[in-house]
Length: 188
Image 1 (tube, rainbow, N blue to C red):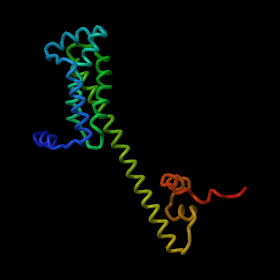
Image 2 (spheres, rainbow, N blue to C red; image 1 turned 60 degrees about the horizontal axis):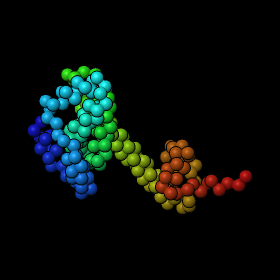
Image 3 (tube, one colour; image 1 turned 135 degrees about the horizontal axis):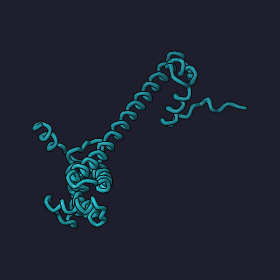
Image 4 (spheres, rainbow, N blue to C red; image 1 turned 90 degrees about the vertical axis):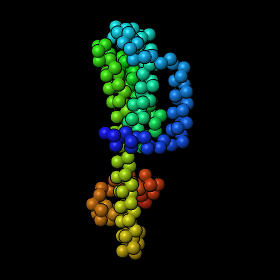
């Protein structure tokens, strides 16, 4: 566990993230800090659906959201986006309060869940991007190889057979790379 905390301290935010964090923390100074003991009274009122108490709790927890974002930080996601997702989780968490005893845990669970979902979405997106890049590279290599082998331009049909891919998939990849399939110029 000590290793993880040491690793987190070594994380370098981008200059943009540092500037964002500094400005955001400066903005948070407008909201007075509320000691942990004093939060219980806010929890009690929020559980009874007191909108003013709910608003105050959201303000109180903004700093906690920042701390959670720092703990969950990944270079794949802009720190500000992580904080904003956490803030959305904060709103849900405060709205979900039903028990004073578990209020803090409920709020922080929603904050972290919202951030985790963003991190997972980004990871999935990066995975899809990587697969697409690999397909583009494979397609490019196959085009060069077949063109060289046959001594002429090859058709999408030949490429599809060679790669074992659907023609539509090849056309979609070519469109993404900016290369329009030439076979679309058929006369009717």
